[in-house]
Structures are given as C-alpha cells and as structure tokens.
Length: 312
Image (tube, rainbow, N blue to C red; front, side, top):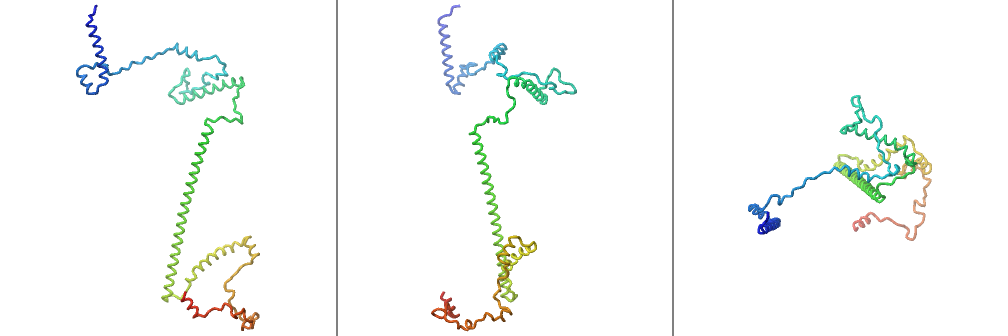
C-alpha cells in the first residue's frame, strides 16, 4: 500500500493541530472549555488521568535469596536468638479436651497471651544453660547502676519544673492562710467594736438614769475595774484549786506573796491612837526654813488657779 504525499502531510498537520489544541485547552478558562466541547474539539481521555492497576509480585525465590544474603554464619553468643515451641501444657483445655495440633484461637485473648507466656518460659529454660556455658552473667550485681534512658540535663529540667510547682503551691497556701487570718482579724475587730459600742450604750443609759434620779448607784463607773478584777480572779481561783507550780513557789519565796496595795495609807483605830512617830517641831513648823525663801514650791490659792486656768 503506497500512501500519497498529500495524505502524509495532512496526517502530520492533524497531529500538530491536535497537540496545539491540547496546549491551548490547558490554558483556557471554563467558558472556553465549554465552547470547545460544544465544537467537538475535546476528546475523551484527554483531561482525565486513569490510574494503572498495581501489579503485586510474590517473588518467593527472590525473598529467600535476600534472606540468605542477610544471614551470616555467626556463633550463638553473637546472635542470642532462639526459636522454640512453647512449654508443655501451654494450651488450656476446652470442655475437657486440649486443642488439637497445638492450634490456638487468635481471637481468644486468654489462649493467645497464655501461648506467649509459656513460649517465653521455654525460651528462658533453654537460654539460661547456654548463657552459663558461655560465662555470660544473668544476674544484676548489687552495685549496678543502669544507664538512664533520659539525660541528666532533661532530668534537671524536670526537677526544676517540679520545684517550681512546689513553690507555687506553697505560695498559694501562704496566700490562703493570710486571707483567712485577715478575715479572722476583721471579724475580731468588728466584735471588739460592737462590744465597745454596747458598753458605751449601757454606760450612757446608766448615766441618764442617774441624772433623772431613777437610781443612786454609781456602779457603772467601776465596770471596767470589776471586769478586770473578775478576769484576774478567775485564773487565780483555778490555780488555787490545783496548787501553785514550781515557778510560782520560787517567786513567792524570792519576792514574797504580794497582797493588797491600795488603801495602805488609810487611817485605822490603831494608827490613829499611835503617836510614837509624832514630831512637834515638824508639825508646828519649828524645824527651820527650807532654802532661801522659806517656803519651797508653795501651791497658789484657789482663785489664782482659776485665773490661770482661764488664761490658758
């Protein structure tokens, strides 16, 4: 079959036009593509990528060859590998019968974990004699310190973080205690103010009653003294019942027993009749003048004191 030159040229032109149209279509917008599709310029499969199906190759011989290349003829001490079946009675009996041919139900968690456990037991029983034979220690010494998985710097960071957390907790606890103490102090302060206001109110009411002549007692003036005496007598009575302690006894022996101080200079019948300390010269001013002026630090009269008070 002989092709004409014209037909060859026309075919080449069509191929060139198709390539140019594809390039142009790749740069066109959606509207231009719609017009091209309406004119028939678009061809099926031009703008759609079709994924080729993957071909999976199970090259058994190649895998065996790779495994043989990886294997090296090394002594067991260098490899420390063991492949062994599980120990005896590894599989639990189901309905009084053990599973046939050592089959394990993979969905049964108990059978699967028991299988791994007994297999590890058999491996230990086989490996220990071999390790002892090659003089490999199987027990950790008492003074053995294993290398930590984390560095010392990392552990220092963790320690600093823990210390900072502890400090924050202590600060929060201190702040909490301070807030509680402030609340308690405010409460005590309010109670004291209320107590003072109550006492002041009672005092004013007692004064008004006295002014109106409703009562002739002035006990309200000694209210604070009475409360102080009552509060001081309370612990004394309790201590008298229990008896003085060693410290109190020592102070009593050194300083005496104290006693009433007020009213010691009051006259009594015996002191009034006792004239042994009377000195006539001193009593009648015959003891002589004191200093140059005679009288020393003489108090001014009442009228003079009033005038001085008025000036001030």
